[in-house]
Image (cartoon, rainbow, N blue to C red; front, side, top):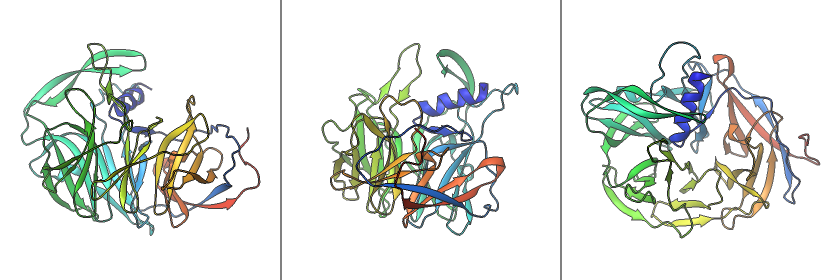
Length: 381
């Protein structure tokens, strides 16, 4: 568990979520007024040319053609004697509805020394990576605070002493490197998206007071305009634990692509969803969830919004998905997944189908879920 615990701690600190091999554990659900549907999955053929790891970065992403994007994360074996890297190696792979795979590799970017991949975002025409990187390499060592459970210690890791900045690296959907854009150092960025026009959307926090910042950038990375976040739409501070004894922890959030906009979900909070269109208009959407529940995540869809909700006090992920009206946040339908599967296993809802993958035993198998009306909850209480 040594390597897994350490890497999990860092991924959580960076606002990422890690899913290892799924366990057979099923939380109870309550019966609500919205119609209930049960989702059953059919397995596709093994995807050729892709070897899975034990863990993936959540959430999965999709594009409008139904292609699934999954970031496979490498783990350092327990008791191997190998010191894990500060940020674990990962490999982004897209899987088309026909089973064709494509790998995206930032190591091929010329004249860029990447310290870490902060985020990625897949659009219909491009795939972008937000990286922290340098234009030169000066080998050095870095001492960092490392949180492993309740224990915090100092550790040394290889580092590049050259000045680092944020860069957005753009690839075509075929995996071909296209360009690199250096970003303004106006604030710390931890989420990135791109609109069809090529305009970037970035989300992070002000370095002076840690307040949330949302902005649009031009294709060359320079600031286009700062966007106003609705009052009460984000926490007063986006970071915590920044002192002599605790590592920096960033409030987790995700960008989800919808038909004509990008939706920001602030995971496991009661803050509203924030929908941003290409013109820069920001709209808050409050999901009308049952009392005592909050949005755990949002699933990409080519129709309405689909949210994963769970009780505020829940310690385990949820298997219940709610379809909500994006205009007023009202619940339209509920979807219950098979025993042992969680809502976060679903990559997207495309053409009325729930798309997912199995990634056990080193193989990747697409899963296609169909929803049928259910007369009673099929999960055991």
